[in-house]
Image (tube, rainbow, N blue to C red):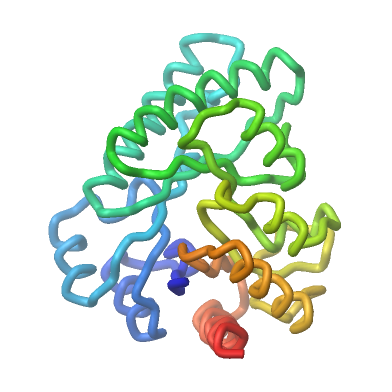
Length: 258
């Protein structure tokens, strides 16, 4: 497993963010579609030894567009946005791209979402990229268990689950059970903490997460042979995001060693 950091945890000029992430000891980064678009920033990332592990394609979606929209024009806009994000991820060497579900949980909307996912997963496969869906409370796929069942039901070989520890806490699911159920369908892992109710993206162990839960989660990841990234997704609104990342990094490394 490799340790990554979601670059959006820090704010400021992109070059400064990249240097801060490298200073914190990370070698891998998660990005958004607008990141590393300039040659000078891509060169700097390379010079700093930062490699891209994942890209969140739902960020900066065109206003009103969604992958499950009933209006084909709005759905096409979302498909175009994500397709471009996948291409960008490929140029950056990322191995995973993910999206979040829409808000409409009607059967028709879920069917449209599934058609969009299948199309995007197929395109991503041509570029050697895993295409994942993040379970997300408040959307049409709020639980990890339900998202996993939905993905498996679509039957596409390049559709995966992105696991988020904070979302697991909000839906009161068992992390180990979810990971064991996912198995080879698990493409990526985000770690963050919260109060069990809000999607707050706190530093690890600052909320309801315990060391015992974290240890069991890593044991489950080892059980299924997960070798991908463990990425810290913390909020830039925290009082001291750099300190939060440093503390969370140390907790993850300590748990991995144990």
